[in-house]
Length: 424
Image 1: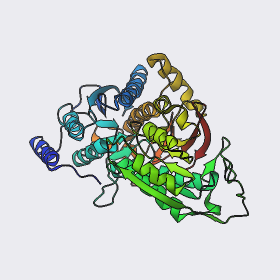
Image 2: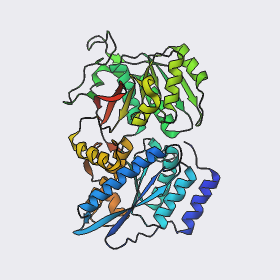
Image 3: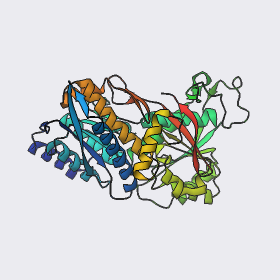
């Protein structure tokens, strides 16, 4: 795990000491403040703006319906937005200000794991509920003790779920035997996905345990339905493969020729790219220019409209996981999609859906907790069962990780096409 720098650690310690660690919880009469931390400037500002849109839309809907009812009293929600600028120190400073000066009851966060995990440390130490669309396992789990954090929850599935799910998909549904991986070694999100994918792809799975993927009727998909000629239910009793190249790079790199040439020489069936929008289009285009014919597979960061714009035809045929896209059959999401498009002039992306669901989950938890304070809210989170625009969400006992299905999308002709459910 990437550690906080000494200077940043000292900033955190001093700031907490000055505020007495236990921040005041006073709320304005009949108003509950919820903080939002995301990147509104910088290289991922377009994602941050969709996060803000989704959160603001949820707040407007709640307030238009009279607010949140807690113990027979109605409260309006006030959203306090902070820009992390994609920087660790700025994200930590934003969290401290929201908790100790703005007196928010809870925080929603959606951005890179590098900025989200330090904020999780702040939330846990101040006993402030934090919920975010962050996949890195370290967001909800203390990397030192390996124990779940008590006050940190995620609204999306973790890397520990989608990495293995993609490995199983490539093994059982695509019939892959050889995989290559190219990942950013300096990112918790990227690295955890790379490692969990590799462990499952090499470790293998039994044929009897492949009912993970289902169709619209939730019936298990036949093995090899998307490829893998020669694979039959009775022919193979287990599935495993070989990771023939496991290549890394550093944040900010733009030339991946050396790594991709080694990948080409290994001749993989699939190329797994667990990376961000800032890198994947370049990597795919460079891979195609070198003649790499492997099927491209990616995580939820790949299932965004801006990925299609940046990658173009080079990404055609690629597969990616996501917990929300407008193309996914989900009647509960129809109104959200329509209202979002009417308000912002574009279809919502999954970060917007994640932020929207996060606000709605907090509202439900407030009602379950029956008291406007952080401990009651935290207790209410453990009793949430929420049917959201990105699927049903409840939390595992003693954990901030959700029990939540995922989806597999394929890029075809410049569009995302839903192909399968991934059951939790």
